[in-house]
Image 1 (cartoon, rainbow, N blue to C red):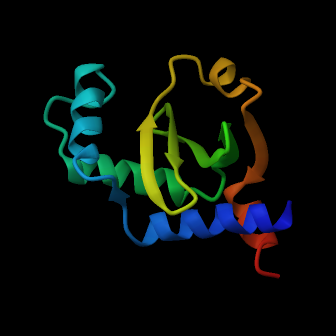
Image 2: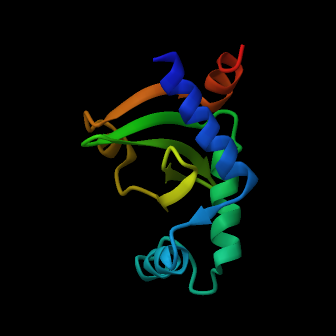
Length: 128
């Protein structure tokens, strides 16, 4: 479990250094967030990535590990301007998605999510 936690922390650090999307994926995700009303019509990829950065640098953000088959995705959840945003990243540090779930409590209650602690807790506990 400790090695897994270190992989999660490493992927978050990579994401903090640079937000990288799968080719073409960033703009597609931005447009979907605008279409669903999660972001303003004037949002840009830069403003979307700024929001993502705010989530992944919030020391009180909740960190989960989401499992889909054999794949594992670190997931960081923080409240930004009164809205709980979820940021999901691959263990390789590549962005998967970022969105505000309609019902965060219900969404995160899915057994595929395992709570690991706050961002502050897991980054402090790792690499010691």
